[in-house]
Length: 110
Length: 111
Image 1: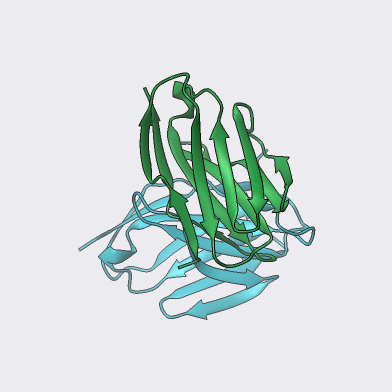
Image 2: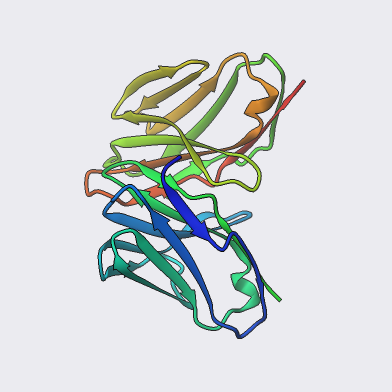
């Protein structure tokens, strides 16, 4: 196990509601990432963090925000969920040149 | 053009077959190459990690990197039904902590 815990693992929410996904790591890695994975698109980077309070956008960041107040926690927030954000979300951590993934959070927006 | 190209398959083989999975890439700066196995409704799991060119073997799995051709491969010998999964290639360069992924190849090993 890579020491990554995602919560919740499954969530169904209504369009327009805010949603927060949490990622917790026990490896003390500097870099943390949020990806979404969709059929035909593979893994797409939403946001990443390179330290406490240091974050940057990925290729599909619109509609998402992140925060990292502690080394071990990285939060992904959907401010107002839309049906296009129905997906599986993976948190990942990196030491130097290898990346490790959590088990995923399945989000359905109805 | 995508940085990393991977044939999505699906690939279906009989048990015991040798499986070859491949990725091509365009960025000559890539130095670190990874293969992940992803079972249905699970997260990607690191299977193999190699640096620069050459081969690396781990049990029934061999990872091969040909930087001159910008081509990487994963070979699975004596394939088992438990190898049925999606396999993703990934790579990164020396700038650190930026990773590029293939879209994954779906493999089914038939008993």
